[in-house]
Amino acid sequence: MIKIKNLHKSYKMGKNSLHVLKGLDLEIQEGELVAIMGSSGSGKSTLLNIIGMLDNHDHGTYELDKVIIEKMDETKAAKYRNKFLGFVFQSFNLINYKNALENVILPLYYQGLTKKMREEKALKYLDDVGLKQWASHLPNELSGGQKQRVAIARAMVSEPKVLLADEPTGALDSNTSKEVMNLIQKINGAGKTILVVTHEHDISQMCSRVVKLKDGVIVEDKKINQKKAL
Ligand code: ADP
Ligand code: MG
Image (cartoon, rainbow, N blue to C red):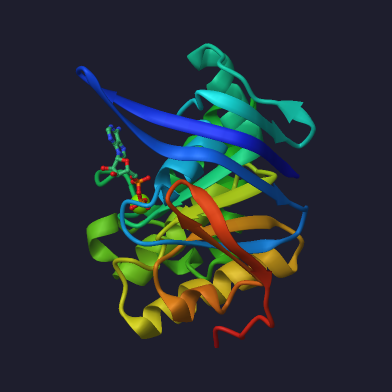
């Protein structure tokens, strides 16, 4: 599903540049649930953003579902993102003045569905994350775990090939984290390829493979016996 070879990424800052990814190789098969670990600043988000086409790489090749991803204009990138990728962030990134259902509907505006179809589909995805009853609630009326579940429904509603989660439990207590990981395991169990960036050991053990980043390359990569979140 994902094939990365010799990936390099630097950030330019005035005259200086910070070389973050230094020839990284990574292959991920369809249906895997992969934890990406590494200390703060090791380049986890940089890697995820490149995989998620939120940022470009400098050198190397990146293949997503057999399509070579290269620099492209933003319209085309947005189209690919919408079709291939779902995102979940630590800070949920919900729109505060839109209710849960409206937040989940957002990615469907580009898909040529009628209003009724959009609503029905979004409601089904809210139901899948156990939040049908909360459809008309605003984000500030939801708990952290509920917000993250809405964010997951929003990421899933466009039926992406890959779900990318950058520290999805980073703002949650341990019980709520387990609920969110339980949901992620359920979605993976239905066949979705998922990458979870985390620096928490417990969370990584709920995945089926752990990849460790250090000094811009992968220093460890192993399949593990996945622990059930709940
Ligand atoms: P992680 O997610 O593992 O904590 P990041 O990928 O966010 O690490 O960051 C890796 C390094 O790149 C850090 O030193 C960070 O400060 C730097 N960095 C990240 N994003 C940018 C940016 N947009 N511009 C400049 N430097 C950045
Ligand atoms: Mg990060």
